[in-house]
Image 1 (spheres, helix red, strand yellow):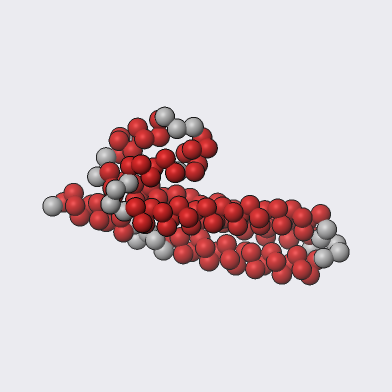
Image 2 (cartoon, rainbow, N blue to C red):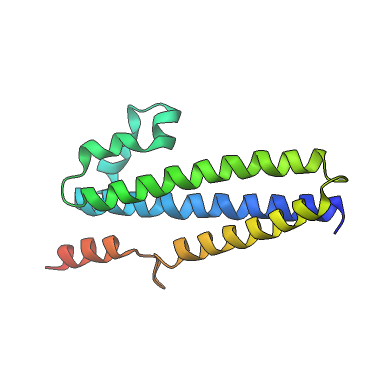
Length: 147
């Protein structure tokens, strides 16, 4: 594997990580939406007073959760862990890119492992959704609405 293929696979793994972040954020919003009773306009008002870092962190939503607090904390911690691993891997791929000629075998093994791990993470996150793009919290909210 040459350095161009290594960089391509690394960028593909990082892209998959961003997809995983999107899925994790959707699950967190689903929990909040379930707790707030499914009012979309109320949810958009929650974002209005927040800056960009607060919105990315999503910790401000904790004040509005009452029923599914454990699930919320679990997914927030998953998001934090995923973000930390993603940042570490971005720097590792950049470092391996600069020293690729001398450590090509280690860099290739690391990149393939990272790509497989990223793909598995995205797959696990995607399995949180059903065929209608609803999570279990969405289904709970919808069933309460129908009663």
